[in-house]
Image (tube, rainbow, N blue to C red; front, side, top):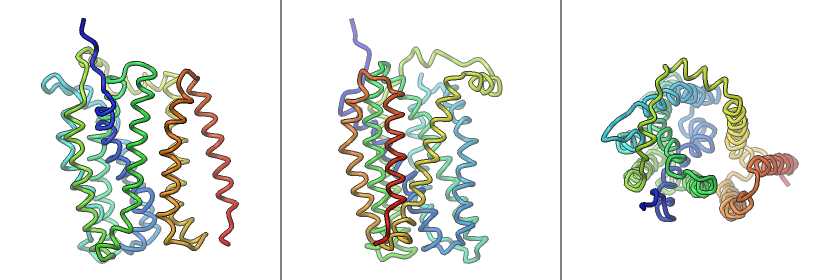
Length: 318
């Protein structure tokens, strides 16, 4: 009797490299790009710089469900998800490099159009990879604890992606700083973000029984149906509120260290300590979640998050 396929530790690590690339880009956008690069390096007015991610996220809101629909209906050599890892890898790397390239325009309108377009291209490229990538997780890890384990590997990969994103500013300075320094780093990171998807494609797998489960209803009908699913709606709101909390904190952190604490050179050190604590605590959270109600763990973590946020707000510059 053959055993169902499953990923071992090495395979899970390779799969997590996909989260590394996705979170490197997301963290770079939220931590450095809009709040620092666009205003301090590209010299785009703050009001316009704030509109760039707003437009990019609006594109995401449209392309994410569309990509999910396309992925569900794909039948290429009997697979739905994995082909997009090969199709999206190069555009993903190129669009990330373009994000940091020097604009050929000098006017504020030209700068805004250039960087907003680059942001939208990256949003589409990341959607082509991220939606099939996330859809594969419940397919490869069918058990409750197995999914928790694979999600923990993903979290480690995502955390390492934040480390990589935080290194962009000092690396750009080491390449001479200014627009040219960031453009060089963009090219280096573009290659680094594209290559792992070839390995992710190699180690992942799809179960035939999932591919045969076609969705007959139309897009609008399916959309209305999921909105009537109470558990789905609650989980969606939990996710949205959590992302708002984390993205707001991430966007404000470099400004908090630079303008409130007055120690811009310590930003990378602060982030290193923060991420080191995340990596060290991950095995503890994994152990705590096994055999326990996940909602209780989530509530405990949320209260912890709020308390530490209040403590940060009380810190004085001196």
